[in-house]
Image 1 (tube, rainbow, N blue to C red):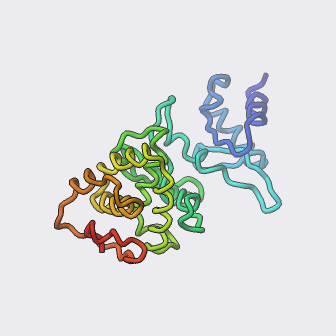
Image 2 (cartoon, rainbow, N blue to C red; image 1 turned 60 degrees about the horizontal axis):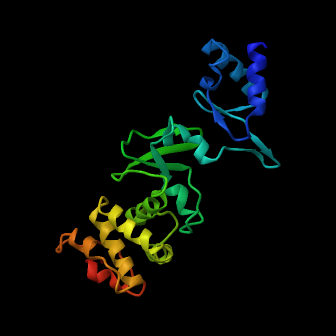
Length: 241
């Protein structure tokens, strides 16, 4: 089979929205330049689209035009390599899914143990935040909650009070085991995150054990969040104003 025919056949079998590079064809086609040249011909013909330099995808067509790939596809090489988990999507991408805001952002935030400068992929800006905890598939939902608490002031189109109300609901829905785990994970987050988490849990259940969080904080430090006492009356116990 000719190299061009092989590439066409492979692309036809790919699911729509799948992001790929010339490397996906190297095992059968020897010359990198030949692969890139043919993929670029396919872009010109409209069979595939270019996401960014060296990255292509098979578009899904709708009456409103071609859809972009899902965010997990756009940044999959930054999330996992050779089966090893490197990071997770958080922040702006999940504020909508978690019920904080109706706004959809063009910024994809990725939390990793080792960060790097931001980059652009198509219309998306990829930004990185430092995650000091070991990242596992099991703790990612809890880390996303902590990220939302950490950056509560930056949630677009949402007030601090509305975000606090939503976080109280999400934290109350956690199992006892998850609540204990998120307290441990919070110890590697900034003091303001620990204080706010402590206030949330104390509000959810006055008998909640928050001693570890309390002991991790400087008793004379205050945190300015402008949260309403009606929304979070326990805030004052944690020097949150």
